[in-house]
Length: 240
Image 1 (cartoon, one colour):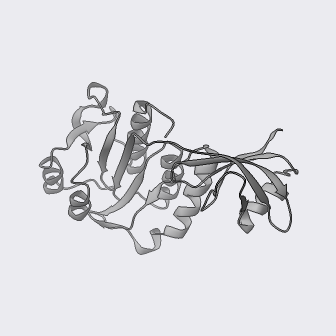
Image 2 (cartoon, rainbow, N blue to C red):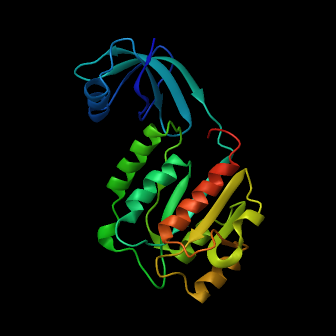
C-alpha cells in the first residue's frame, strides 16, 4: 500500500498496535481534503517524543481514523539547546521552523542588557504551530521545545548540567577548528541583534563556554543561531 501524504502526522498519543487513533480536526482535514488520502493508505505518525507509528487509514470522515500496525521508539543520543537573544522584527518565526527541521531539542529566548524581547514578539502558540508543521514536513520524531523568555543568568543556571557550551562571538576561535560533541547536551548562546555586553560575555565564558566564531563576517542573530543548528546537525550520529 502506498504512503499517504504527508507521511508524518503529529498526534498526542500513538497508542499500541491494533489500536485505533483518531486524528485531530485540522490534521484530518489536511490528510483527507488537502492530501486526498484514501482508505488503506499508510500514514506514519509521531508523538514528537521519539515515538513513530505506522498504520493504515480505516476511515476518512468525519475525522481520519488510523489503525496502528507498528510502534517504535528512537533513542536520542544528543540534545542541542539554544539560548537566543531577540532578533530584529519577527525573524524568530522563521528561525523556529529551521531549528525544528535541524533537530534542535530546545530553544529559550533570553533577555539581555541591550535588548529585551518585545511583548508583541513573544507568540508561543504561533511558535508551537510552526514547530509542529516543521516536525511533520521534516519527518522528525522529536518536537522542538520552546521555552518562555528569561534572563540570561537564569537561563545559564538552568543549563548547569550541560555536556558542553559555546558562545557565538565574532572574536572567538573558528568553529571549524573546534570539536563539537556528538552526544550529550550541548548549549549555544547567541546574543540579540545589538550583541552582548562585555559583562555578559564574561559571565558566559566563566561557566566554561567556548568563544566561537561561526563565520568570517558578522552575522545576524537568526543567522548565527541557524549556523549553530547546522553545525550541530552535522555531528548527529543517528536520526534522532
